Length: 458
Image (cartoon, rainbow, N blue to C red; front, side):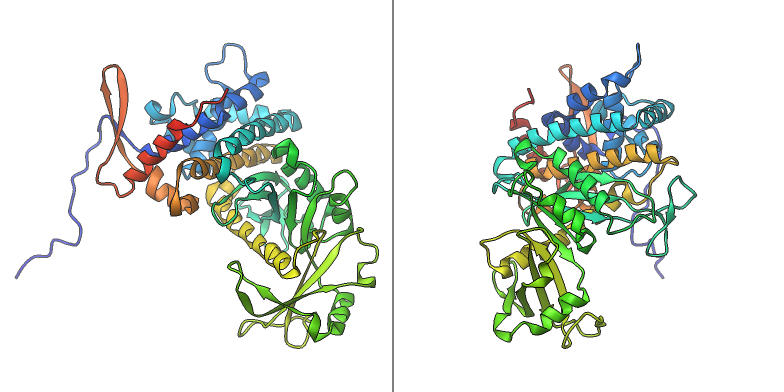
C-alpha cells in the first residue's frame, strides 16, 4: 500500500534570504509617479509643512502611503511593505513620523487639502498630455460621474452615523472621470460626509462638482465639452440650475425621480412617439423604448432641459413600483444636450453604471473603511486613496495595452505587483531581475519599456 504524499510539495522554510525583493512589480507604480511628476508636485505642495532639518520629505511620506494603498494596504501601518524594500521604494519614514505628518496635515485643514489637490491636478494634466490618444479627453470631451459611497465604520468614529441602508458609518460623495470602454477611470472628487447625509443634498453635489472641475485641465472647467452625470440623487432644482448657470454652461445627464406628474405624462405618450432603445454596439435593446416628455412637466426647471423617459419590460421576478405603468419599469433622466437622437442620449446616461465599477475598485483600494478616528484625518486618508487610484488608472493608460489596460486593481496586484525579483549589483548599478517563469513578466517588462520612452516632466 502506497503512502499518500499529498497534492503539493513540502518545502522547508528558512528566514534570512538576501537580495530577494517582494512586490517587485510595484516598480511600475514608482515609474508612473516619476513620469507623472507627481513626486515633485506633491513635495512642492507640502513644503510649508516640512520642519527644519527634517530627514523625510512630507511629499515622499504621503506618496509612500498612497503606494502602499495601491499595492493593497488599508491602513497607515501597511507602509511597512515599502520600508522592507528600500532598493525599490527608497527610504521610508517610521510609523510615528507618518502619524505625526497626518496629524499635522489634518490640523491644517482646507489649506493642506487644497495643496494636495493642486499637485494632483498638475500631474493629471501632464499625464493626459503624455497619454495623447489614450487620454480620457482624446475625443474632445470629458465625462464626470458623481455617486455616493457607504463606508461602514466598525467603531465610534467622528461623524459616523446611521445610514439609509440601516448600517453605520460615513457617506462620501465621489466623482470619477470616465475613461470609456477602453480604460478604467480616475477619481477627481471625494467629499467626506456623515453617514446620515442626505442623498439629494444639492449643496453637496455642487461642492463635489467644483472639486471635480478643479482637477480637470482649465479648458474643461466650463462649457459643453464637460458632461456631469449623476443618478436621481442629483435630480434637484438647485443642482441643475447651478450646472446650467450662465457662464458655466456645463452639459449634464442626471437621473430624475418618476413623480406622479411624470407618470401621468407617460400614460399620455402615443405609441408612435416611443423609440426603441439601443445597446453600445448600435443594436436594438430588446423590450425597451424611450420617449421625450414636454409640456408643464418642465415648468420651474432650467431653460433648455430635456426630460427623457425609458420604459422597459422588467426582468422575471422583478417587483414593479407604484410609478411603473402597464407592467413596464419606468426610469427618467434630464439632459441639456441637443442635436442627438434620444436613444443615443439614453444609452449615454445608462453607461453611468460604470461608476459602480469605480466604486468597487475604490473599496478594494483603501475605501473599505476609514482607518483613522477624526474626520480631519480621514479627509487626508481620502486624498491618499485618490492618489492610489490615480496611479492605478495612469499606469495602465500609459504603459499597458490590450486587455491588460482594463485590469482592475485586484488583478493588477495578483498578476503584476506581487511578482518577486532578485536584486543584483553589478558595475556599481543595481538591477532588478524578475522571475522568468512568472506568466506576466513580459507584461511588466514591456510596460517598463513604454514608461522609459516617455519624456521626463519639466
